[in-house]
Length: 61
Image (cartoon, rainbow, N blue to C red):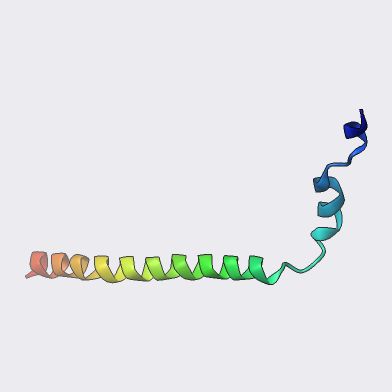
C-alpha cells in the first residue's frame, strides 16, 4: 500500500529540469549525432555527385 504514495519521477523532475541547461553529456551526444549525420551526407554526396556528373557528360557528349 505504500507504493501508491511514491511519486513518479517524471512529474517532479521534468517540472524544473526543462528550465535547466542541458548537461555536457547531452550536448556532446547531440553534437556528435549532428556531426555524424553531416559527415555521412558529405560522403554520400561526394560518392554520388561524380557518378551523376559522369552520366550527364557521357549522355551530353
